[in-house]
Length: 123
Image (cartoon, rainbow, N blue to C red; front, side, top):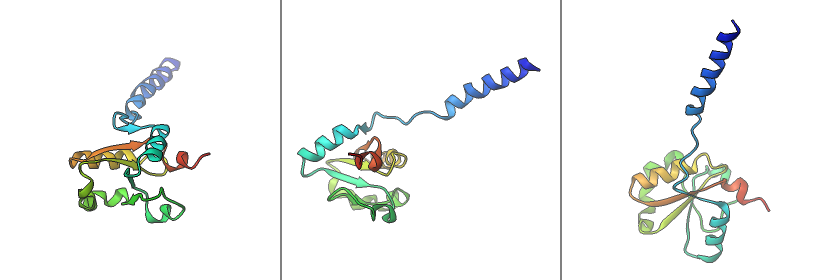
């Protein structure tokens, strides 16, 4: 009975490691890199994919707000930025990778910001 428990536990741990794959970070930027670009490039394009309720607590100046839930339907609003890199941010980095993927699939250049606004707002 003990061997069965050990086998089941080992199998569960092995299989769960596949289900919890980390996000692809090839299209990401660290918070430090993002803040440096933000400081030095006044023409940076920031897409905040949080909901309007979340952005009511504050946004990065000049950021564009399109919630990730409607980004595919509203992606044409970003057409004039298609030749620029778009930096996608959300609250905690869960939705930003999805937003960046949507943009990339539509032919945009995009990176998501690691950590999101929760890290951005830390001193």
